[in-house]
Length: 316
Image (tube, rainbow, N blue to C red; front, side, top):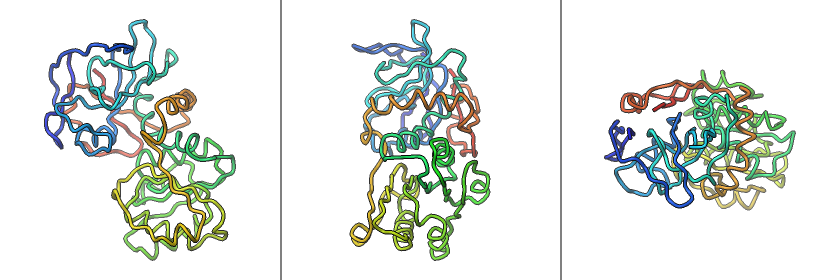
C-alpha cells in the first residue's frame, strides 16, 4: 500500500510503498479516507512527544476517518505502539473508534477532532465544569487554543478570556469576552492578566514554560478570594516543557494543577466524549477550514506553517 514514511527524526516523511497492515486479534482493517496533519503528528514524527516509542521507520498520524469492511464510517485514534494513519489502510482497534453518521464531512472531522478534543475532554472529564464558570485560555492564538475559546462558550462558560502572542489572531478569535496580549513586557502582561482574568475558575493552558510561570504568580496575587478553587489544566507546552513554581503559590491559594492528555484520561474516557463533539463539529459550531492535500504530497506540505483556522488534511 502507499504510505507516508519517516526514516529519520526531524525529517519530513516521504511517500512510498510499504507492506499492507495485517489485523491483529480484535483489530479491523479500514480504508483511510482523511487524516489531519496536526502538531501532535509532527512532534510524534520527530520523536519529541512523550508517547514516542523511539522506533524508526514509522508511519505518522494519530487519528483519521476511515471506512470499515462492513461499510460503516468511523473516526479512529491510533494506538501509541502501532503504525500511524497516513496510509491507504490502517489496522484499528474498534475500542478506539466511534461510528460517524453517513454524509458527515470527513475532511472537517479529520481536521477538527484532534485539536478540539483537547479542550472538550478537559472541560468535560478533568474538571467540574458548570454553566457560568469563568475560563482563561492561555495560548489562544493556536488552532487548538482558538477552538478552546469556542468550546468553553458552547459548554456554557460565563466569561472566556483569550490570551496569546499574535495580536491579529487574538483579535480574530470567535467567542472571547476579553483578550490579553502576551508580550515581552512581563510587567505589562502580568498587569493585563491580573485585570482581565484574576478571578477565573479554570485555566486551559497550551503554553507552559515561562509564560505560565509568570501567569500563575500574576493571577494568584490578584485574586479577590484566594481560597476560591482555581483549576489549572495543563494541555500543551509550546512555550517550554518545564517551569519554576514558588512553593508559596500552592500554600497561599487554592490552586489545583492537573493535566489533560493521553494517560490522564483513559482511551475509553476519551471516546465516550467524542460523539457529542462530532455533532458540534458537523453542525459548524467549531470553526475549522480543512485544506485538502493528496497523501502523495506529504513531503511538500509537511513543513508548511500553520494558518489560522486551517488544518491540512491528507487524503490517500
